[in-house]
Image (tube, rainbow, N blue to C red):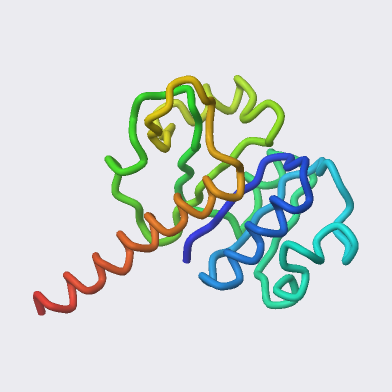
Length: 160
């Protein structure tokens, strides 16, 4: 199982879109509080509230509670613009977590220090622009990790 971790997300429609993607891919969504919105029909309806009931979602009071959770990922990959290591250049494993900072300020410095060896970026061609939208970045990352996991299983099955 893949885990998608949103650290203090601020925009309900982004979180709704990520939740919808997680429901469709059977990935577990972790929401690390505080959130910048209330999870309710009004805030998430357009982005996928109807999928919310099918979602494996875990809410955590803070980062420490997330890290202590028995339902958390084995390894964490921090997606950030503050590294040169491409997300294509790593090998994802079943049980990995893809971590995304919030829309306004990304991941805090202490998280960068904690996950220093596990930071990756989604390359883009336009250096004048900072980054992808949170839900788009989560989708790109999730599907690349799932592609690798599915391809790896197919390779192992074919070699037996």
